[in-house]
Amino acid sequence: MMQMRRPPRVSMSRCLGVFLFIGCFLVPASLARFIVEKNSLRVTSPEKIKGTYDTAIGNFGIPKYGGSMAGVVVYPKDNKNGCREFADFGISFKSKAGALPTFVLVDRGDCFFALKVWNVQKAGASAVLVADDIDEALITMDTPQEDGSSAKYVENITIPSALIEKSFSDILKKSLSNGDMVNVNLDWREAVPHPDDRVEYELWTNSNDECGVKCDMLMEFVKDFKGPAQILERGGYTQFTPHYITWYCPQAFTLSRQCKSQCINHGRYCAPDPEQDFSIGYEGKDVVLENLRQLCVYKVANETHRPWTWWDYVTDFQIRCPMKEKKYNKECSDSVIRSLGLDMKKIEKCMGDPDADSDNPVLKEEQDAQVGKGTRGDVTILPTLVVNNRQYRGKLAKGAVLKAICSGFEETTEPAVCLTGDVESNECLENNGGCWKDNVANITACKDTFRGRVCECPLVDGVQFKGDGYSHCEVSGPGRCKINNGGCWHESREGHAFSACLDVDGGKCQCPSGFKGDGKNSCEDIDECKEKKACQCAECSCKNTWGSYDCSCSGGLLYIRDHDTCIAAASNEVRSAWAAVWVIFIGLGMAAGGGYLIYKYRLRVNMMH
Image (cartoon, rainbow, N blue to C red; front, side, top):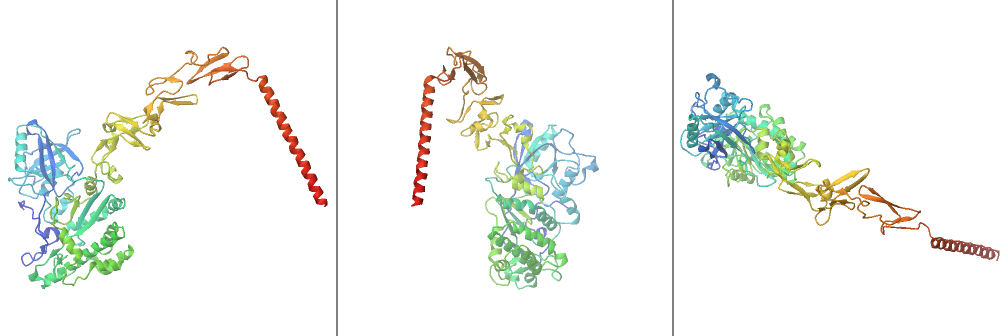
């Protein structure tokens, strides 16, 4: 099959199963305005072709959202379009130990984009660049129409791919033909905007579980991603919104059997027949009603501040109410709703009357939302994931989607789930990321982020470090002495500890009393005895100690430290004073005893009378 010049973006058969009849019977709610999602490719050598070029992200495989990949470009001598297995030509692209990854350049045409990438992946390459064969604006490489053969390899593509313009590919080919080594860096770090500490994302999905490989992949993704999605939503890190595509039936055919079986509200909201056979099984309107019910489950759950319950309902409905078991119905849905403790009456009120010849507010809002706004194009493909108003490109897989969402956080605000080993590598573990580190206090300026790392002086126990984060950080402000003594000198000996840190005037290093030095790097003990700074009276005997001194007096005299002098331990005046004190105490005691005897006497006399 020949490669299509323009992937059919509005092909409903590719998105929801074949439901074209009477020309184009069901039509999208708006004409498509498709926006190509891009990343950048930077050529780092040779010097003559250095520069940055736009590429279009392939809608399969696993793009490295939030990251980048460096490699060497190779243009094969045989099988230049990549439509056959490279092993047939004895070609391998596996990189040798220590070598840069291989980026294989293949030509567009003659087979599906996805098949080219699959063949290159099997040959051991790390990424694929597809060269356009005509001068035109970039387009998105999408998966082929579903068939048995393509389904086997599309879901197994794991390497990233990108389409490049013909003019740029000609430059690469010319440089390679001249024998140049072409080094490039494929960068996805700006593919998703990352303005703040919350990511808004939406999934355009479908409740139909019998629409082929894409539906199977979608159902599997929803079940796999439920855990991370609920962690992010419960923590307030993300705002998730589910959406559902519907189509309308032209007014001239609203009374036809086909339109009645696939639409509700008199042809306003339609979905294709699940079995693509109007005579058997479920009808398109059954899908529309369940889509509407799932939207209302989200709205009612959101009103009770439990929006993550949508993930519980959808996964439970998939498991308990599949079409193949003939359980895809309201009765089964109601049992799931009851098990989750949702308000059934509110959900039914939200759904409205499907037979009314009027707009349904919920589905009308969905049709309006299909129209692209700002940097986001129209939603015409199912499934479609939108992160921070940019459409995700690539395989819907738990790890890949989590990386795309994590790349939407402002750097250093990512939640813990984005910094686990299976999502990103911690660059602070190797050489401390090139940032400042205090080895004594084990404090570092390196902060691991989803995109890499930042060198930023830390805040520790309420104390702020200041500096450039790379070569210098020092504590500043109140409490600085709590952290490694504020970077000042400190030492302990024989149970005595001294520090030069003073937590005053913004903090400073000053040697304590008994020491001299700069206070930062060193403080040396002052020998008060040798330098005659203390214990200098005639009766004094001085002995230096670390950080202080001991002074004793001869002849039983007492040393007074504040006055640096010796005085008599006990004088005659002191003895006289103590004698007077004892006389007073004895007198008071006798007076108290006499008073008590008089009291007892009077008490006895009164009792006799």
